[in-house]
Length: 316
Image (cartoon, rainbow, N blue to C red; front, side, top):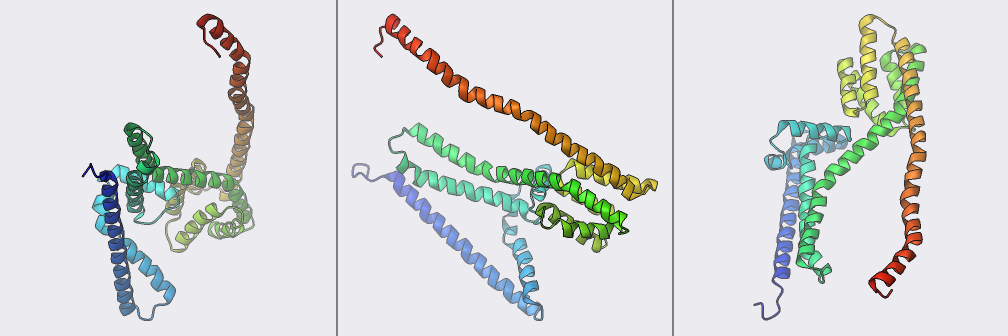
């Protein structure tokens, strides 16, 4: 078999690719069958429901059934780890009940794709490389695929946190103006949501959740506490504490907001000053890294060549 020149690794990779295509086809077929069956049951039970409501119910149904069968394989048994991951996903904007399972499913799929790429494509690209370098490259690609979802979720959360921190002081100022104009806290919050729709989409989405939960009759402090947990910003948690203390001790909410919004503006100004003061250090570091080594090479390089010629007998 080896004498005929047949590449066993390539044949094995083709077999794996064929199996992967069969698995994908079978999974897609099962999802289509599940989709049709769910639509049929929804039409039988909710014959007079509108098309929009049926689609939303279908999404919830599929969310609970498509990944439920793989829950024990996709979700780790450590409750603390699952809770921490769910909190991170919520802060990154993924609030679905199956977000944890989807995260681990994405990690498994990416690792499988990386493995197939490493087995099929990488040997053809790195024909002249040694076996050790090829194996290390395969391992590196799979490792990157494994950590890519977590890195992406973390970066998404950091971006959302920065946007909320930027827009929250302005939201407090608007909230203070609305309350001083005679609006209640809930009315002022609705007005703030309308005003911030064009300037800060992320903060607007979070405040929209707050207003909807308040309209549904949920406890105000519970809603605000959930908002602080979703945002993951220290300033919002402090704001919730200020509101609770003002309500507890009978202090005017407008007065408490005036003081706290002033502190938030000062904090934002100090953060801007800190970044401005760090700029010369960063520029100096970049100048040192990209200027000093080339200068040293230019000045010392000829001397090193001359020393090697005279003492070592090297012809350069």
